[in-house]
Amino acid sequence: MDQFTLNLLFVGASFALYIGIAVWARAGSTSEFYAAGRGVHPVTNGMATAADWMSAASFISMAGLIAFTGYDNSSFLMGWTGGYVLLALLLAPYLRKFGKFTVSEFIGDRFYSPTARLVAVICLLVASITYVIGQMQGVGIAFGRFLEIDAFWGLLLGSCVVFAYAVFGGMKGVTYTQVAQYCVLILAYTIPAVFISLQLTGTPIPALGLFSETLNADGTSSGVYLLTKLDQIVTDLGFSSYTEAHKDNLNMVLFTLSLMIGTAGLPHVIMRFFTVPRVSDARWSAGWTLVFIALLYLTAPAVGAMARLNISEMMWPNGVNGEAVSVETIETDARYDWMATWQKTGLLDWEDKNGDGKIQYYNDKSDAMAEKAAANGWEGNELTRFNRDILVLANPEIANLPGWVIGLVAAGGLAAALSTAAGLLLAISSAVSHDLLKGQLTPNMSEKSELLAARISMAAAIVVAVILGLNPPGFAAQTVALAFGLAAASIFPALMMGIFSKRVNNVGAVSGMLAGLIFTLVYIFLHKGWFFIPGTNSFVDSADGSLLGIQSTAIGAVGAVINFAVAYAVSMNTKETPQEIKDLVESVRVPAGAGAALDH
Image (cartoon, rainbow, N blue to C red; front, side):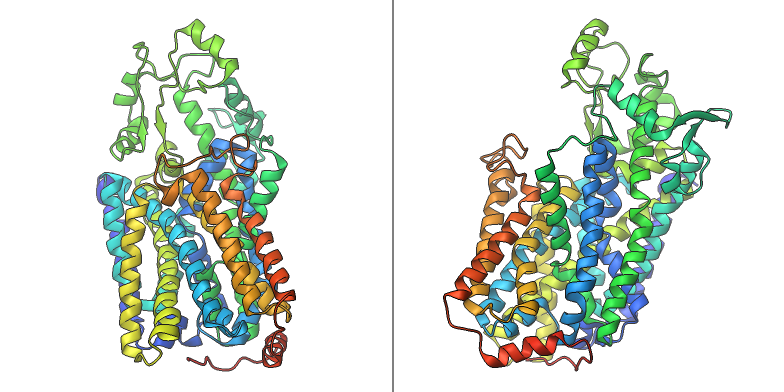
């Protein structure tokens, strides 16, 4: 059976499972659509949340960014994991105790203002749509590769699949679909990693293999540690050392902080904690989520490092001081078939610029390599395109693993992207139908009309995500990092002040959210282009070329500080919070009991 047929079997079987679950668990009421009827077990919810969380950014993109940058991008792991600790301790149980359906509903009631609820909806939509762009980007890449079509058509096809099971299933259907997706994606991520770790180090646990000695061709130990070998190869090719920090500390700290508090402010993640029966279950759900996430996050650094080593050695099979791989070898050797397959997607390409029949892969922007390149007649890096988002999906092919493993990775990559896309679309639809339409514009809307509005708004969000996903502002994980920054600057401070401060009033909360959102969004547009349109940016997104010396992916932490400062300053100079709201805050803090959701 050829690889294309195997891919279709794995992907087709997984999609049949997801859609079957969505039909079986189809939401028939608003409670089931928004909160799965409040009956999800903490372990089940933890697994579903992990799938909701481990998006295309985690599965497809993160290891690629680590592979080509090294230590500096470990901040993705630290920020995203640390954020869940904040979520478990500071937000999840209190929001569940409040007993409503959405984040915007909590903000509207806590700050006793329809305007606060409306602003929260706007913040949620801006962050969620930015996040969905990254997910649809990953969907397009995965579909494009495994159906061997252009990534554009993969994006369109993937959007149709998301529509099919997210629009009809609601939170109830999506919850159980995400449990299945978690099982698929974690197997798809760890099984290839185990194979590759055994190939390179003889160690079956990838996280340990990362710090082990590599093997010789005869299976004996080389005496050289994997990271030491990788450091030597990449520096010989003019790239930065893999294991050393190169970014300035300010951007790394702000970026990590932005990811942490952005995690705790993401509406599609917070919504999952409204689905459990009790307050204590919300905290247990967060704990189980950490366990399930750790299985992938402990593996990701090994996947990145081992893939970078494999690619470097494939491009220089005779060592970096020998001859580069020939064009003939790429075209005729079965081990290089993956390159031709990925070339069809437009995400990988090469060119023999100097006509010597070899493909020289090196850092042609390095001054240290200029002399060597001139001496050897090289005319620039000839691996002209290598989209980092393809690395994990291509990894089993690069390592020449069995076809069934490649098919499993196809299903896993799609599961990761689709699961998060569905969660985000639920957050968007609930914000529009429940918070905006029923909560403010048409309060007498029937339950049937509200469900219809939720599904229509979800479909509209898919269309917007596809349009923006055609020209994303960066790799999938970088696009997602922007969404985290927006959530960090707008939603997280409002939730924290709503739970832990009785003094912050409605005017202060609205002023803070608007200040944090506008500052962060404008800063991002100045560096990434207005509405992410290429060529409309005013500054280069680097420490040297940015407006304040802070990269756009790290500015969310600054936006959060502005939000807190403005909210407190305005609150201290305006009317004090009413006593009934102070009593509400006090009741939310009591760690016991949670009434049924009040839908009004």
